[in-house]
Image 1 (cartoon, rainbow, N blue to C red):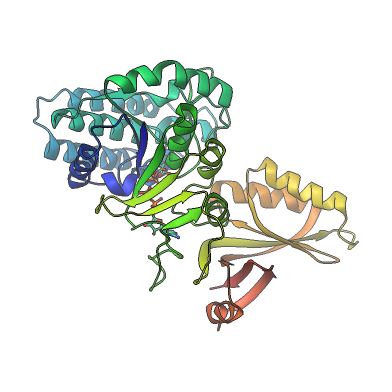
Image 2: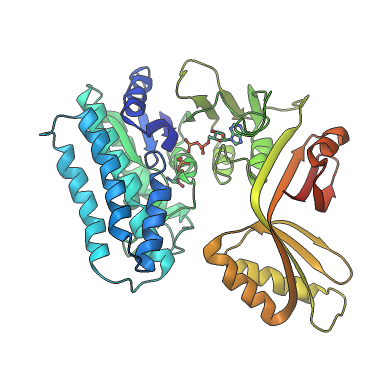
Length: 419
Ligand SMILES: Nc1ncnc2c1ncn2[C@@H]1O[C@H](COP(=O)(O)OP(=O)(O)O)[C@@H](O)[C@H]1O
Ligand SMILES: N[C@@H](CC(=O)OP(=O)(O)O)C(=O)O
């Protein structure tokens, strides 16, 4: 049994969905579970809609119409107007209609998940209908009844025993009968509310389902030839890895390589399932196999750049030395605000922490820190991480930039720069 994951870029238009079907056609001799993300940039559009609705802004209906138009245009390109998928999609939009009618009373994170999740519900309806239309028998599955999470909205924590039991109970029989198409990124709470697993979490969904089903492999179909030593959107002369160890892949994604969601690798490593990263526009190309590759040599360094970073500097109000108690207090505040620390450095009198600027969380984090400490910060920074680096590359990448923090170990160098 194989698990395929198709991300937003692969299903961004009608041609993408037709291409998905062509890829799937090559594997009809296998049992196939297909995990699909929201189409194109739908999640970003739904995030905007959530913000507008939460703040009761004037453009709520305009933003909603844009999402609708985008989906209906693709539907009209793929299906005859009388196809039942039009009703399925309309019924899915009704979930948004109901929410938008009332004023927001729940928390932002709760509302976010109920609205943003619609992207994956729509894309899977469309993909499933299209596969059936071209003769690839497939069934739509609501993943929210299978991936059980707690109620940490926007960052649902998976209840593995419950998830494993549900998945193992129904999926093997379903997969024996047809292809199964389901949503990435989503989970469900015990009260049947929708959760999401964190932005770009569909890779993680594929990994969870594969681990529960002891799948042969997971393939994530991407717009790149495989895992490269750097993001080709920002660097020229990148090289593709034919193989990569689970450990190296975990390190890369932990430091911010966006090609795979960081939570994806561990469940696959535990279950000994390889992760294939392949190009959706050249399905026969070998891509990258992430598995038990050992003693790998890295002739070229891996470069990971995270933008929109904040470097905050915290010191005691009484100007005393940084103590373990203060360190734990600072970490507690970061954890409470669900802000992940990317790099941390202490000196005698201050503690510097680098993290992603997430607008909805930043203000509260800053205010809480300010209550207990003296706080200064710089923003709009970049965090450059190099794995298997040479000193000359570090110099080259930081040339002409102001370095605000630097940390190096034998394998890894991290630099926070302005600009
Ligand atoms: N080291 C890397 N190797 C390959 N792609 C990378 C790397 N780092 C970042 N990327 C980016 O990851 C993108 C593919 O991942 P993503 O956009 O999450 O795909 P999808 O959402 O379609 O699953 C590429 O377009 C590329 O810009
Ligand atoms: N649609 C969600 C989940 C996801 O994983 O998407 P993608 O596979 O396109 O990165 C997001 O954009 O966050």
